[in-house]
Image 1 (cartoon, rainbow, N blue to C red):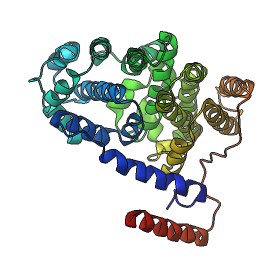
Image 2: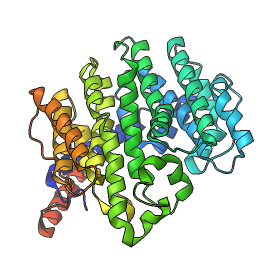
Image 3: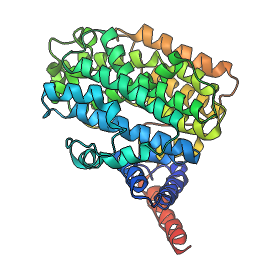
Length: 403
């Protein structure tokens, strides 16, 4: 209902639904590839949607790259695995991708299935071109070593925070750039820009995910640098108390401001892409990231429950992102939304405004900014209009089903 309350999002939702149906029909028949693509949809629906638009070889490589790193992440996240067992698995994981028989039971739900049947992922991996295999092996090795390093190490400083984010996300940017290069469709991007692409997404995910339940302190403490949150509270647990609302929001704003540092290098990376499918693949998550920053900034509800972008707006972003003009427009509009929410009493107000203005200036100087109207607030439309829209959607779906 929330998504359908905006008529401009209805068509995008319908198109997204149809595209998702088409993807299911494109799953390869071989057991290992069928498992890989069906598992990809289960652990990341939005990622599955954009990856299917890549060319066949690159699509397979990125799919397996994602699943290998997701499996590695499952090992890292499973608190039931003793440290003395977990660390060697993380460090040696890059070797296991070459073993058709290796699997390790851990994780829950879909992630447990992924780990129990990891030999199918390895089988698919071994069918990739050697350039793809070497890129995936290198990044898996480096990421596993970095995760192992932080198993027994808390994130104390902002430098620790950047280092951890580099291992778990910046290296993903490295890997994707190497896969794009191996496909022969892109030049090899500078590591600094690839790193920023990963860091911006990871820091945004931390903002959104690790505050959904502030009571999950062990995990939250792992990923929030003490150097930042200790300026606002004695203990991270203090943010869940009503009397500390102001300090909690100020800490949140500090974290968002830290993420915005990477936005301009992300724009630079995307502006150099030549292949349309790769551009689409890269641009959508980045726009979602800046949108999430705008949604979470100065928003106390982040500490009270789940805060996520409307599905209708997500569908619209996927549908409307086709060029750098669309990217500049989205970054400009979401940065403007952040700017409108800056409280001059916030300790980081001046720094946040400086980052936001710099992003906006980069977008404006491109000469490609349009007006799109990405709204994060509640819909202004009345219930009667919503009912009319619902009726039209029902008619449209009926026609599509008949066809």
